[in-house]
Every structure is written in structure tokens, then in C-alpha cells.
Amino acid sequence: MRQNPLKSNSYMKIIRNIYLQRLIARRHNGMAKVITGIRRCGKSYLLFNLYVDWLKKQGVKDSQLICLNLEDFANRNLRNPDILYAYIKSHINGEDMHYVLLDEVQLVPQFEEVINGILSLSNTDVYVTGSNAKYLSKDIITEFRGRGDEVQIYPLSFCEFMSVYDGSSQKGFDEYMIYGGLPQILLQPTEEQKVNYLINLMKETYLRDIKERHKLRTDREMDDLVNIVASSIGSLTNPSTIANTFKSLYKSSLTADTVKIYLEHLTDAFIIERSKRFDVKGRRYVDTPYKYYFSDTGLRNARLGFSQIDEGHLMENIIYNELRIRGYNVDVGFVAVEKRDKEGKKKRSQYEVDFVCHLGSRRYYIQASYEMNSPEKKQQEMASLSHIRDSFKKIVITANDIHIRHDNQGITIISIYDFLLNPNSLEL
Image (cartoon, rainbow, N blue to C red):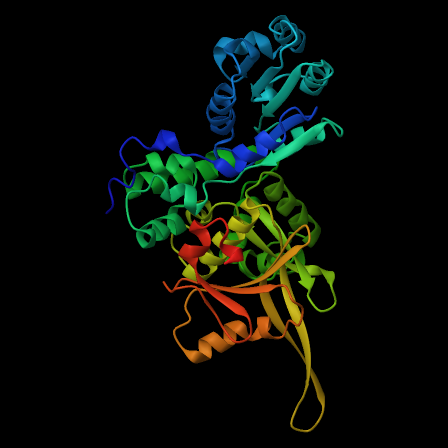
């Protein structure tokens, strides 16, 4: 049992540079920067620690910073919108830029009117976070009607995790795959405490928020749905398929429409994300089926009692999250190929591409293969990529600890460690 995974006193020094740079790039843009993401993923730490420290290094004075945690009991009177607005205005003195940072803004009725009023001032720059059963952070971004700029953050990436983990990349990856990257996990010294933290967080915070918010009459259907999705990460599915699973496993009459609504609840809460299916040759999206991935593998494993540790699918989930952290739109793809059989008849086959990643004009095709220990396995994993005829880069990511190599078809093979630990790994 691993007792001390943290480097000494290092948990306070996790530098989440990718998000910090996104906030810096949005500075003074005239919009409310809304930090979104699953609860407990570090939104407040990013804003009040990392960003405030950066602002001070740029010469911003304390008098220019208006930082309020509205969940703090000491600030309960500021939850009144009139009092909050008056308080903020009273602290804006002179012509210097003032930075208004509000945590748990959803606790203020009509908060969007308060923020829009502050935004109308010429020398304010506004940043907010917030989420609970009443308002998820995704709801808050919609309240600003074009004046909100979203910065979505995820649990710790593997690179961020390893920056404070005291051990090898291989051991760190095993732990990250099982317990995920929620920052508080790093403060749990034993396996038992990690397990209990994740199980309770999933049940008592995330799912309870959804049930209270949407006034679900029964817990069982949502609980069962989360279990089904957790068991099928990396597998193609749709609401009809899941409804049929309910019928066969639980003798339930839950309809596909209700399943769709429940899935939307989970995605709105940032617990899972849906990846659409993309026809590579046809250059079009296919409505169904699609895949779901958990924003944190530790939460996925906790939901199943840590009894289904499928390394291949978990690695695929981690790759998906890493690509999303880097800012890519990520689809699951397929390549349709027509061949003639021995009798000369045309036969149509489909080869699955794990990920088709888009960012502006850039595109990458990525295949995840936990192990490639034989020529047959290597050929199987590369089959889909070899049928793609365009010039975009094709990559296979494997858990085998290998040096980066390029084969004679132009396909790059890279280890999961090089991929995750190098932010420029897709360009290698």
C-alpha cells in the first residue's frame, strides 16, 4: 500500500499553466470570464491563488483586487445583489484597472445583472466561478447573453499530477488511472481514504446535486444509468441501446427519451462528455452512435466500486481528457472501405479511429493501443490509420514504454508517457 504519494509540501505548488495562460489571454477583453468545470476540480484555486499571484507579479496592487468568496459565512450579507453591487463600486477608486473576482456567484440572486452592471464600468475586469445544485457553472455562462467568456477546466492532467507525485512515471500512471486527478486525491495518504473520498464525492455531491436540481423522484434510475455508462466507456452507444440495457438488466420501462435527458444532466454537470462520430472519408458527422467518457477516471472507477479496472479503456479515457485539456474538439471516427471478396462481390467494411482531433486548421488521427506486443496486434491497431489517405498526422499511442518512432506509412508510434508529459507531443 502506497502511503505518501506526494513530494514533501508540494501540493500547494501545482502550477496549472494551461488554464493560467487562457485567463491571461482573456485579460481586459470586456467580458466576464466564467470558469467552468466539474465541482472540486480546482476552479477557485486557479482564480484566487494562481491568477492573483500572476497579477501581483505584473504590478497589480492589492487595492486593485476585489476578491470575494461568496460561500464564506463572513460574506453572507454580500449575497444581496444591491449590497454586493454597492460594495464593489465602493472599492473602485481612481482610473486604474480593478479586478473583480467572485467565487460561488450563484449564491447571489440576479447575479447576472450585478456582473453586467460592473462590466459597464470602463476600468473593471471580471472573473467568476460557481456551481451547486441550483446553478451549475454551465448555466452561469448562459446568463451573460454574449458577455461571458468561458474557461473550462478539468481535473489535473497527468503532467500536473506528476509535478507533485513522488515516484516513477509508470507508478504514477497506474495511480492516476485508478484514482484520477481531482486535486484532493493527492492529499489522501492511503488507498482506503482515496476510495472513500471518491465514492462519497460521487454519491453525496455530484449525483445529489443532479437529483436535487432536477427533482428526480427516484435515485435508482440515475444510479443505474451512471453504472451503465461507467461500464461502457470507449464503447459506441446511444439512448436506445441504453434503454434496452435497462429493460434486460433491470426490467425497467425507462424510455430512450428519458435516458437522453438523464445523459444531458450528467454532461451538464461535467461528469461525462459525449464524443460524436465522424465519417473520415465522407467528412460528415453521423448522428448515432457515439461514445461517452468520464471527466475523471477515479470517479468512474469509484462508481463501479473499483471492480472493473480495464486498462485499455481507461487509457483511452485519459487520452480523450488530455486532448480536451489541450483545447481540441475530439470526435470518434471511422473509415469506410470497399473491397472485393474472392467471388468479386463488393464488401463494405468500417475501421474505427479512436479519435479525430480538430483545432483550427489542424487535425490528428489517433489510435489508442494499450499493448502492441506482436506484429498482428500492431497491424490491427494501424489498419484504420493506413486507410486514411489525407495528409494529416496519424498517431498510435501505446502503454509500452518505447522510443518515439515513425513507420514507412508515416504513422507515429508514441508511448503514453511521452504523449502525456510533453505538451507538444503531437508534433514529435
